[in-house]
Image 1: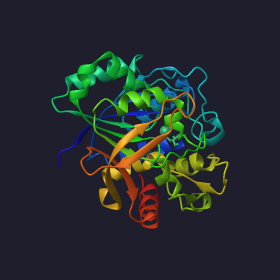
Image 2: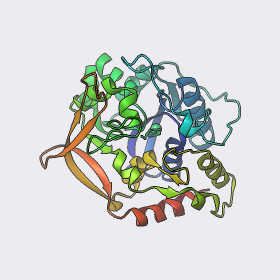
Image 3: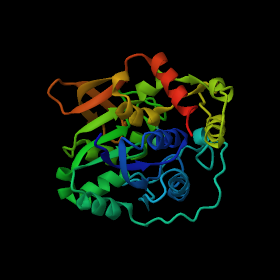
Image 4: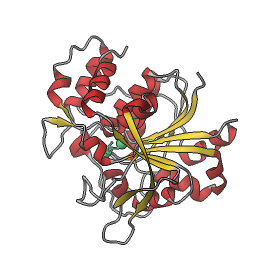
Length: 302
Ligand code: BDR
Ligand code: CA
């Protein structure tokens, strides 16, 4: 099977970590060229360190690059340590990191994309800051990107950090707007998917963890705090990767992407069905069945 050339841009982040683990488990699908850090769930230094850790442990040899520390225009970004913990990985403590990384992920991304014989895919499961900057700085990159698979926004203008905005969209709404209007096809994993498929936290705690990785998963999830209902867990970002690995579990709905930037509801997002659109949003055909497969995959990881 031909591997998908891909750059991962993320802000780990508990669900980002699970998404990375699913990529590790499916190395025969992904030709991972670079992991780029965005600010989001925690400040950029912490997301970069977490990525260094995952790169060393699971993707040794892959390039790592640190992205932009602030959203394009938002002056006081709100990080999400209240959900993900101060270190971003719940109750899991990573060791000190020495894995090499480069400073300017926008330039590293551009070079990686230009060096590739095939069009590149981007998996973006944090705010879109680095991707927007890449498009602004190097507009020729648009024709070199096959598709962006993103966790961001919502179908119906609802949110988790504001009544109208999802976290990644709210953190850098200007970036989301730029990317959504760039012409690069997007496959969006909207907030509703994660909300409609929450898992009981206790399922993770009581899983029969058989090795260090599985114990690490338990410790990461154990530190997640969903303030609406602490007994539940949303694994938003994981679905962005899982929908590539197991597309049969998802519906792919062609849609237009509309992002609000009016100074009142910045980051509000509507995904409007349009049979002719080249963007899609995903939804789960059967959340219970998908959750069963996800748990089985996580707790068979070696
Ligand atoms: C998104 O926000 C972050 O907290 C998660 O990692 C996910 O990418 C969900 O709204
Ligand atoms: Ca994320």
